[in-house]
Image (tube, rainbow, N blue to C red; front, side):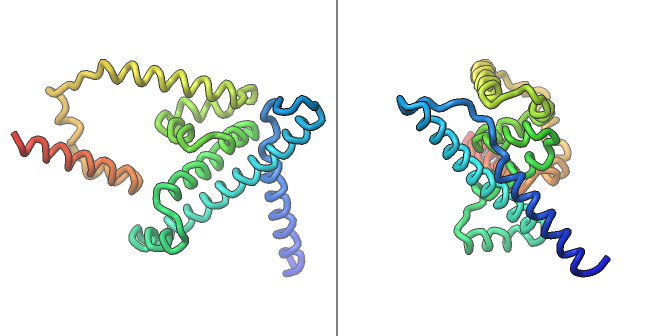
Length: 206
């Protein structure tokens, strides 16, 4: 294959991907802000444009952050983020959206991932198997997904009120803790270490 042909194929593919992403979010319901129906249609189209710009930016940032974090060590990565005016938490959220977007197969599911807030993305990651399958449902819309997530949040709050620790078996959590932590990302490792330090400080006072 000639160099020119390769370049043309590359440009065509890139153009196709960009076009697909620009029109990723197409169905967001209706807008009834104005008393004029034509103005509402106009505002709906502009809202779609805004959502698509935001989604594309978040996904592109997620892709970039993911490539860098997999190429350099953690210390270098943090310095690079700071150099570019980002903090690690924000970068982590963009990376999560990008990774979930890549994994979802259905176009409708990708649209929902693009629409979701960072908190909603985090919630789906905590119960990955449940929500990953749900996102492949072509009949699911954003309103239904939000309702499901909200309902799950209420259930979690109710369950947390009656949490009972099984102290007899709690030692099992710490068996091969190092190995378990190695499988987690840096952010979750730091979170666990923070709470472990709190536990040791409290126990040390008694």
